[in-house]
Image (cartoon, rainbow, N blue to C red; front, side, top):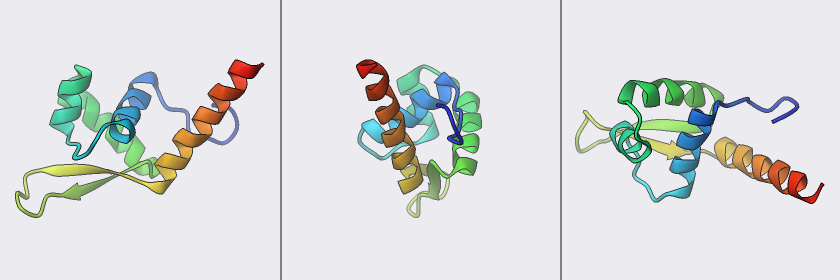
Amino acid sequence: MRGTAADLTSRQMAILLEIYLSSPPHTVRGLAKSLNLSKPVVTRALDTMSRLGFVKRKRDETDRRNVFLQRTVKGATYLADFASVIEGAEKA
């Protein structure tokens, strides 16, 4: 996207869309399986998206080994803006 918006890779965007468009809960293992990626690849992408504020990690209180990924308002806003850009390009 142009302007000051974050510039995500296609892999990062695929992960972000999976988190926002499919039902939770989301885990690294689940995302890796559904997108046919390795867990380290998913983790690196999530590190970037966490720094940007698009996703949030939350430790599972019942099993501290698990980490769930949560949507954020900032991530939802980014995807809404991205959708507007796509819709604008279709009309042009």
